[in-house]
Each structure stands twice: as C-alpha cells, then as structure tokens.
Image 1 (spheres, rainbow, N blue to C red):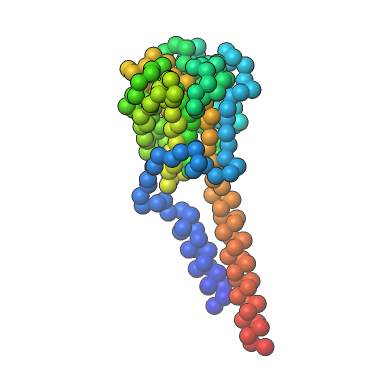
Image 2: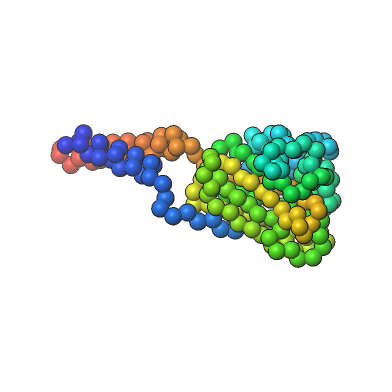
Amino acid sequence: MKSRSKLQMATLLLGILSCPPAFATVVAVGPGAFPAGSTLIDFGGLASGTEVNGLTVSGVLFNYLVGGSPLNGAVTIDGGPGTTNNITPNNIVSIGNDTGTLTMVLPNTASIFGYGYAILATVSVANATTISLFSGSTSVGSLSYNGTPDPTFTGGFAGIQSTIPFDRVAVTFNSVAAPAFALDDVRFNTIPEPSTMWLVLSSAVGALLWRRRTLLAAFRR
C-alpha cells in the first residue's frame, strides 16, 4: 500500500513538471520588481570601442543582427548619450546601422528581464523599444514601450515578466523615430533548472513520507 502511495506521488510530481502552463502572460514591470540577487550587467568595466556583436558578459551572449545576419561595427561599448535617468557610461550604443535586432542568449532560463535605454530623440516616442522573449526557438511573447524625455534624450526603463520561462531575448528600437540607440543595466533573474526543481520537490516529498511513517509508527505503539 505504501509503495503504491509513493508511486502515485512520484507520478503526480512528474506530471506537474512535464505539463506546460495552459496560458502564458507577459507584463511590463519596473526595476523594483526584480528580486534581490538578480543579475545586473552595467558594462562599466568594459573598454570603449568593444564590439558588441559576439560579446559575452556575465554568461550572456550578445549578437546584433541586421536582416537576420550578424553585423560587426554597428553596435559597440561607449559613453553613448552620457548620463540619463537610466543610462550611465559605459553602455551599449549604436554607431552605425540601428535597424537591427540586439539578441541576448541567457546562461539559464529566466522569468523577468529589463534594461534602461535611450534613443536619439528629445520628444515622446511611441514604441520606442520592443522586447521579444523566446524559449529556444519558440516565441513566448513581446511588449513595446513608449519613450519619454529622460530627462533630455527619449528613453526610460523597459522591463518584462513572463509566466513561461525564457532563455533568449530580442530587442529592437524605433529606427524611424531615431537614428541611434543606447542600452544599459541589463538585468534578469534566472530560475532553477528542471533537474534542480525535481531534486527539491523529491526531497520535500521524501521528508513528508518520512514524517508520515514516523507519525503512523508512534500512533501504533
């Protein structure tokens, strides 16, 4: 009877871990939504002129794609627009073709992601930047953010949280409204891998089963 109960519990846990959510939601969040211990990449220790396409920082691989192909010489580490409310040198800045997509492959799956940004404009701009999330090659969702003077150059903070974990992020900027962009303070919070979650849940179930056996043994005395 006990073996059957253990088998049912293990089957239930496996089902919970293997079944994807029925619905996914992505919502905009601010810097305060990120939990303590979240990864923060501020680019401050990188030399000006560092190529961003192919750059890896804190386990994050950055690539810049134009027409689906990687492009060197268009995005670099630099002082950018100087200091804004959400940008502090050094940061990522476009110095050439700004119509591309900045992709970031994360070291582990995450549930929340964000960055400060600025574009070369001084008025409010609709859809100033857009974040698209992916789990492997599967799209998780996307959001666009309106920029406002911050305090001079148009920008702000773009943050997104998803109910489905993601491991790749694609960022674009409104190249029609502005000929250049800057990005800084990339932050995200990774979540345990499935194997780690299984280990934690298995340990919890084991502790519950041990406690149940202990209570039954004490009751039968």
